[in-house]
Image 1: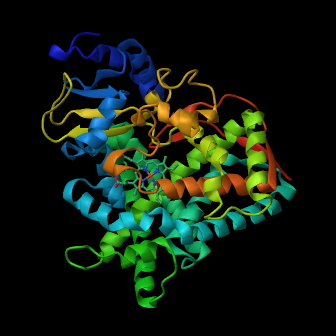
Image 2 (image 1 turned 180 degrees about the vertical axis):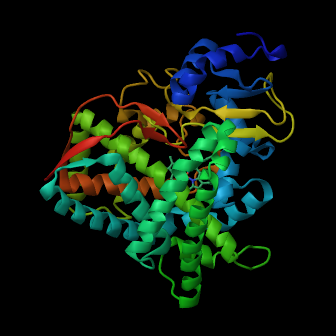
Image 3 (image 1 turned 90 degrees about the vertical axis):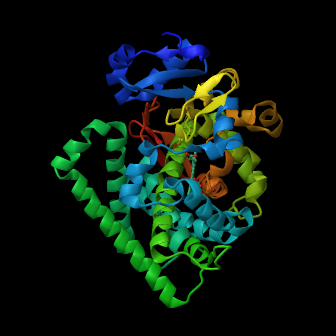
Length: 454
Ligand code: HEM
């Protein structure tokens, strides 16, 4: 490690990076955590022999980048270009003026009050899933919960977007295509040097064709909805009805397509992973599970949750927040300064990749005593007020804060409640599950759970 200019930011040398490369590719989290332990809250590492990236867990610096001076920072090519190549430029993958225009247009549709209609759609979908689960566990009482949650969140997002417009066979084609694209996209992000190989072996082309099929399906749904003149209370209706302030026009079919695909991508795997970790943690912490059941019984009895009763489920909300502290689905965010910048005495040169290491800050003992312990009581109002606001950011922060944060919290609360109102659950094997940090933070192995109707 050596000094970097006058800032003396610790630097992880290129040689050291090479030595750790294999471990880093396998799982970057333990390596980054080790560098943090040695360097403090901010350090530089080499991406290539000639380009360095800054990694930080300093709340004030994160707040500067995401909020205070956010106009001078854009998302990196690494984060957006491959996704945009296959899926398109929607909120998640755009920058600058186009992003702002789209955000202003779409934001009102995600306002808490607007979610009332969506809560009903979500609940219907969750109930359908639970009925099927009751049937299934008659012959096999074990489920792999990450797979289950991926299926369920996919169905919830697709019904929230398109209500009942889509036949089951089309939904399953959509789901297969999305899964194929999502697992492929991770590869060029993690190992960009292999892109020529993916192209030479035809894998790139194969996934372009899958993406084209995906786009055709969604474009058909959009066109049919336009022609039908129907207005169900769903996200597609909201997107179709939204008007740009200056022109009074709505989005084109192409723009609608890109935003729908982005909502699928952004809203499905993140939520599924948070839910998988939630079941894993709850099964390992029976006292928390008991307290959760007690809250549900007091607030709801056996009634399903509703738009009005969800805010009363305070412990349920704390549990989910603590799950996303320990296992933040978006475990790292990145930004690049558009012009040379400066934070205190740290220079942030134009073009430098800056990793906002969310997993690192969520496990920092400065803000979280005994950080590896699962302790939902960290999220009472009083405890929250004691911490810097940018020490906890599962949904990001500043103007690019996750547009689906309220949607996701409500969805996850309903899933927890309805499953607990219906089933007792236990891990088949009570063992440590490793982290698999892809685009979102997945469990590295199966989480098998045994279910019994309550
Ligand atoms: C537990 C679930 C979720 C987590 C942890 C999560 C996390 C995040 C984070 C951290 C960002 C900011 C990324 C950045 O600044 O680089 C983000 C952005 C976004 N999320 Fe979520 N998200 C979740 C669920 C959802 C859902 C359900 C939807 C939609 C239905 C959604 C839609 C979006 C969109 C469109 C953006 C881009 C916003 C923009 O840049 O303007 N997310 N999400």
